[in-house]
Amino acid sequence: MPQSLVRNYIHIITSTKNRKPIITKNIEQELFAYLGGICKNLECNPIIVGGYRNHIHILCLLSQKIPLMKLLEELKSHSSKWVKTKGKEFSNFYWQNGYGAFSVNPTELTIVRKYILDQESHHTKKTYQDEYRAFLKKYQVEYNEQYVWD
Image (tube, rainbow, N blue to C red; front, top):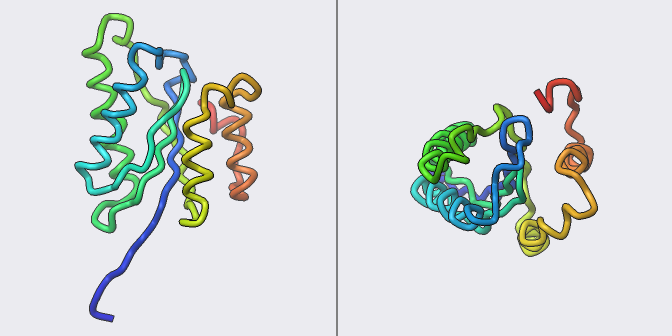
């Protein structure tokens, strides 16, 4: 086949270092837009970026030109530097080392988009850790609890 055709929707989840609740109301929308801009610059079309207090969710169309690991490196490094310019209260802003990335069926984009939009209300009932464990279970990812949170 002479042509490469790719369409990979990815749901990325990562948290702040030690799940510190540092993503405040006064910065969250700007941060989400900034992360979306990074995705767009890397040709990873962002569908929605959201999150709550100590973590983010990004639903995007992964470009065939960039490996997932490179996308995460760019997202974390650039956004971390940017957040630190937003005030003294963000001087210790860091992302955790790891992340979760899960493929999304194109027929479920609306469901995942709504899920990301509803993060604040969702987290009145469930912690980030419980949410993340549920994703790992749903996608049948084997993990060691000790290494997920360190």
